Image (cartoon, rainbow, N blue to C red; front, side, top):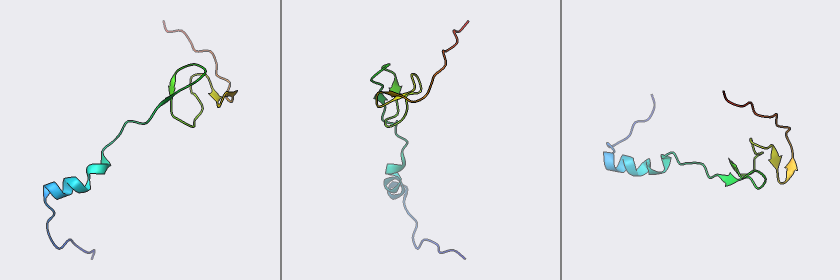
Length: 65
């Protein structure tokens, strides 16, 4: 049998324990080449560059009808 808590934790105390579990928006940076938003330390999904070097060859995007 698993151990059980000795006392009931109030809703206020429970909320204080869980205060750091809130979902936060990721910190985004701008690509120096194309200016699009991207996650830091990752290849730009729009132009395929990383630290000024072309890493991934991106195909031309199709125009929407």
